[in-house]
Length: 534
Image (cartoon, rainbow, N blue to C red; front, top):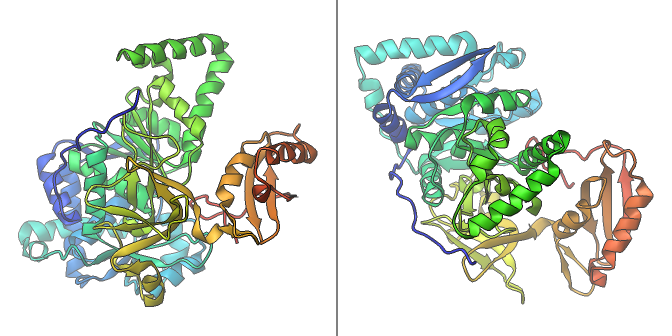
């Protein structure tokens, strides 16, 4: 049965982040806003506490002369104080520069210098980098930041005019995020408070959230920043901060999230762990039978999944209903999580679009697509070929202001209001976007045929034992470089070579992999775990 579109959800039309902080802090004052573990103790902060802390830190920033767009960098693990630093910077009319905590010290400082950072707020683990740093005012989260919050709260209570006098130009740059750079040098993406809120508001017109979340991805990326950390504030829900991947299960159980935003690697892990547990219990046949039964019942609109698979769902806190996956293509088999009552929502985003561009919906999705474009935005295919494929371009309020101090790079991607994503794909008759590859990765043969290496990487990547693969080529030949899964010691190079020969038989001549090499180490990756292609 074909799924049908349905009306958009109603979401408060909030224009900027300062407005959001004030709105949520007052409307949901007694609700939990942020929780996290400190040791074994669960710490909780209400919306009222969040608002008071943001006002306090913002007031201290202003008193210290940080105003009118002063650049303030922040680096550290996911934490309440990271969140307050971000929100206070926005509320005081300044510019936040979130730094990737996995970067070398030298790169962090280069990005701070490039952006003109005047202050650096840092987790204590970076004390060696910044305690005596002369390039910007050092503010350690443990000690100095707390003092600034408390001092600012006292000032605000005595006279709130310093804070209240700030007027936000929500179209001006308020966030500078440096791209991870899979194929080139990182660039400072300039986003505004309005572009971020346009993104968050319109994303949730497509996807209705009804409960709390856990932030498992690093906050310095726009995806978790928008979806896990900022979005819950609109609805008065709680964001539980996961500070370390080793504690993900513990944090999920404690937070009992309704939704969680992940990259495909996490979704794959969830799926595999579920089936490992099923097989270990010896109930594989029973579960497969129950899945068939629930699928039949769903056809007559009876959903028994929560009841029949309660023991599985309880391992995710018992309340989880939605897993949002973005950042990379998701293997289709991961949709198998839906068999247990977990809705998989695959979307598409790019830092330069704050970051969301499109998303599937619960009950209105197409596998292998990245959904429909956000309301108020437009998607268009430029330079279409005979198959309707071309570069995906986006226009609307989510698009960045440009690259910081880099007019040349900005002019290359922003043309007449359209942002060139660099992704190749097509839009079907129902408005669903399908991505087929990256423009920079495209291989053009001597006969003029276009080959997307991502397609071959997905096909060959499904071969037993292939953990990582990069496909490249020239006008005459296609090459595959492979890293074999070390957890599959029984898989030999010759096994994979044989499997690729069989795969080639299913492909047209121009798409066949002509040469395979094997590497001894994993591919170098960005901090978002994307393979650096060159």
